[in-house]
Length: 465
Image (cartoon, rainbow, N blue to C red; front, side, top):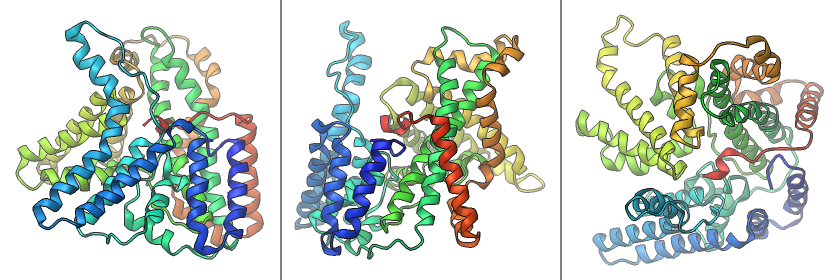
């Protein structure tokens, strides 16, 4: 049930109507029931999983807070977190470790389980880990009811692909849900519409062209290689930020505020800056629950580099059980480390820093070329795409343009408009522009999205993680 699919609009219409009918004190059960149906629509056989993980976290917190000493409390917190990660490790990494690490020594190259990955298992695990650790650290009180914690996990706008919410970002809102109202409905609709256009018009249409390049055998031509590199950068951003915009819009229509997950990342001046703008809730999760506990930048340059590399390698592994994701994480770890080590040198420049436009170009191109490993099914295919712009053929420019005119135009439009891509601007426009112009613009967005997609939509990329 994709946010951009007709069946979801039917689901949300019914849910939205019930949101008005159900009394406020019972609305938490509507969240649980509606979100359960939403999750079960994908694979009903995995509906037990978010319930099990929630039970582990909720009962683990009770067990943790019942400890008679700080040491016992710590051990119980660690045991609870390990329990939360066991299903993720089992479903996502068993086949990878067996096939890639054990298989070569015993002559077996097949997968052991061949089980489909439960949707959203990584996001649910990280959400509940934040819940347990924040209570352990005293950042959030363990006062929420079991039903509220379950709704916190299941709340369907963020269930499958985030944002990854801390307990203080959603639990208080669920406990004190607002009175249902249609006032200012144009704001969530505008935010959702922006995400819909990103997904159906930009991500899907550019993605078709990118897929065609990756389906080619061997090294593609230089122009096809550049299309794959720049096109995927547009696709992955519009796909994931489009999902986030839709999630934020849906939640806002229900009176719930979700944090923004993207802030014009391709305008970042360094990799550190980019990762504070891209998938913000995941970046900050790794920062607060892994990088800082490892020591962060506090214990010398050598340990700082180690902490960066460990964090980014695990970030790569979180995205997928494949060597390509590990290499993607390693590349970013090296890039962030180099950026960190060069800071003293950059401060000696006349301006005290690299010129902004150079930083933006270098950062974007590093991200775009590293993303080839994120997209490629194999290391060999990634190296083919990398090499294509440098040693591939530059022939057939006219036919290339003719065959790819629409995705090329979309890529150009995207980069021209990216600096204006900000939910705050959308809210301001809705508040201050005359309603007839806003509603006309929204109708146009929907007309374009439906016409171009022709009622079809591809799955969101991050549903695989």
